[in-house]
Length: 76
Image (cartoon, rainbow, N blue to C red; front, side):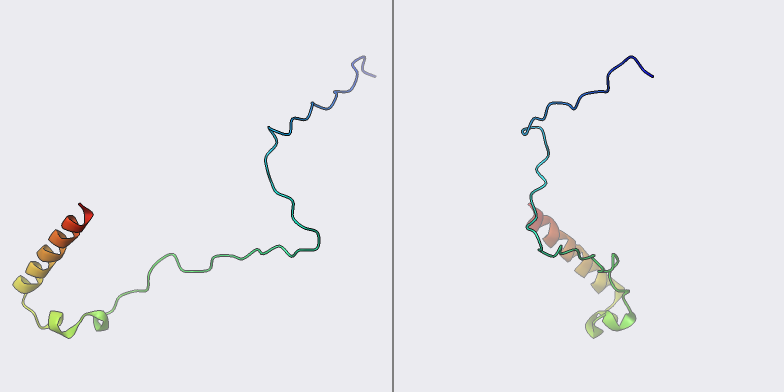
């Protein structure tokens, strides 16, 4: 046997206790999982508009540069 008395309960301080809320009795818990895919759907050649497919490389590079400039202007 030990000569030490059992440890006493620590004093309760309601300010330091986490606020977990009190669920109402009989209320069902709404637990749903997020099942949306983490990655977007894979792109295919069918997703590219016909005017882009028929454009020259120079025209596509010009479009890219213009879109990049628009994005930079919108962010500022």
